[in-house]
Amino acid sequence: MNATTTTTATTATTATAATAATEELIAASRERIDAIDDRIIGLIQERMAVSTVIQQARIASGGRRVHLSREMEVLAHWKDALGRPGTTLAMTLLELCRGRV
Image (cartoon, rainbow, N blue to C red; front, top):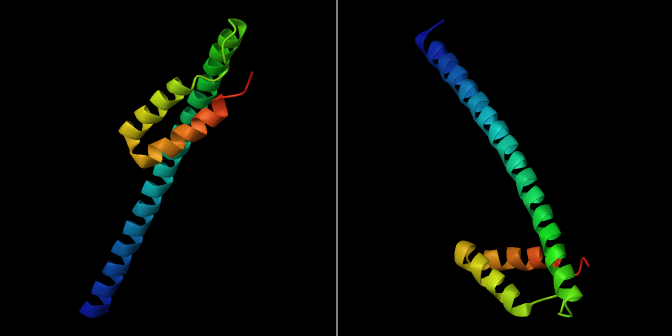
């Protein structure tokens, strides 16, 4: 085996190890994302339940199911925190939470 063959073999081994390490990092990161998504879904479900309680109380006292000024506050909060895409997320969240009563 000459020096060129040895260098080529070493480079290939290093590249293979780097690829394996990258794949492990990606797999572990995807597991973390899946766990975070599960927590987010759980929080959204909890928010939906709390929203139902509020809507029921509002309706029972003769009020409206939806409080538009409150929804505008929620939209502004999400926009301030996440920018324009935050508004889109908040709209989806509000849609999920409204009208469940």
